[in-house]
Image 1 (cartoon, rainbow, N blue to C red):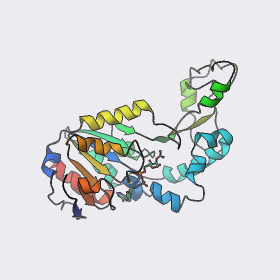
Image 2: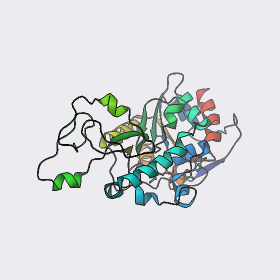
Image 3: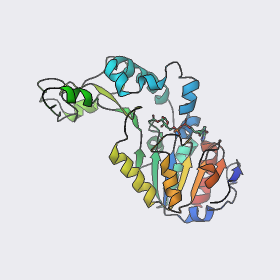
Image 4: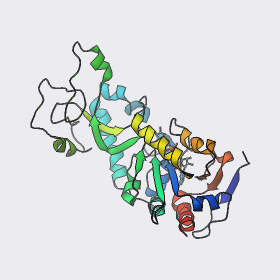
Length: 287
Ligand code: OAD
């Protein structure tokens, strides 16, 4: 593989020619793989910044785990409510909008994101694979340890698909009742049918990714003719392997990141910010 080729940030509509630009223009299916840097210009601190910056008062590794929820559900819920307050006001930036615009004109675009903020969908992207879930969706807390320790096998609730917490389910409760519950300040909500505690539908530390979601991400990467990797440090597996998977197939990979990553030396790496570079690039690809 070749040496790193860095292209300095250029103003909008002055995207320089670089290797693969022609194949990117021709690609009928482009996968866009994004990380926290994608939403940085929407005002959401990147994950590494959160460890040291604004949100560092509580170490996420202390509160974003199944163990922490089992020990103190309310503390974990309240932490997510706080995070959501910052994320809820964020709006898609020019980079999110540019990615959504890439699909105009009939090209297939698959967005695979590690972000849990829903900003790609808010910008109009369809077919978004959310590898790490979505902060604003809830799901039941499934405590496998408790289920194994219980004398009887657990009953699966027909409404939330979790392990029923109450002995008798409320048969009048529906999935619509469940869908009406949101991440908001107050007591940790329970499934209205079976009483299971609800939690944000995000991947916590010590948890596996949903295999169906990972399959969808791999299918997008395996089916694309070019991949654009935006704003990820590529330090967290299995997500981090996805751009490498495309590269191994010989597909052109383009990276957009103000900082070098392990991938940078092997692909065309545009050094700059997503909201500045993506509109120029996508204007170019659309033309
Ligand atoms: P990181 O916070 O690890 O990395 C953010 C990346 O974005 C860095 O490489 C920055 O250089 C880059 N960046 C910063 N500002 C940018 C901008 N304006 N435009 C483009 N890039 C910019 O975030 P992720 O790689 O997404 O997982 O982290 C991956 C996962 O780590 C997260 O999804 C989270 C965490 O563990 C879970 O919660 C499961």
